[in-house]
Image 1 (cartoon, rainbow, N blue to C red):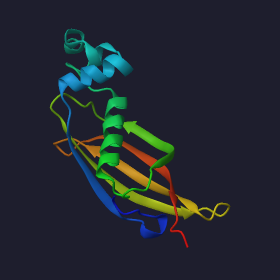
Image 2 (cartoon, rainbow, N blue to C red):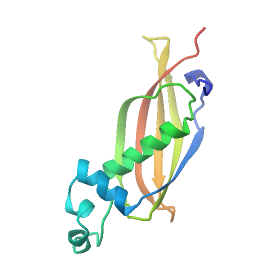
Image 3 (tube, rainbow, N blue to C red):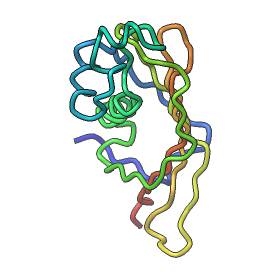
Length: 150
């Protein structure tokens, strides 16, 4: 089992890379068919004549694959991830079939709880870029993390 990582083990400025994640047309259509069935995500003909000129991924699909990558990469070992809040979620550029996504995760704040001394809040900035280094999505994620048991 991977080592547990605690709030005490982390520092502002630490960062991790995620990906690569290749977005396929089949995956884009499959996800959107179930969760975001808009023509630009599921209908190749409608998408081709629409404002994006082709199929694009749902922003929620991009967010979901970024989350899966975070869980699979396990930068905090076997410490469970408990999301508290997402701020400033921005879908900046359309994600298209064939795009290869990479994620930069950076710790921007660490706050120990005053009322619950066994935990704290970790604030991370997530930046998702495509193969051309263009940012396609970004957000700030607040997560609850345990402190090292005494």
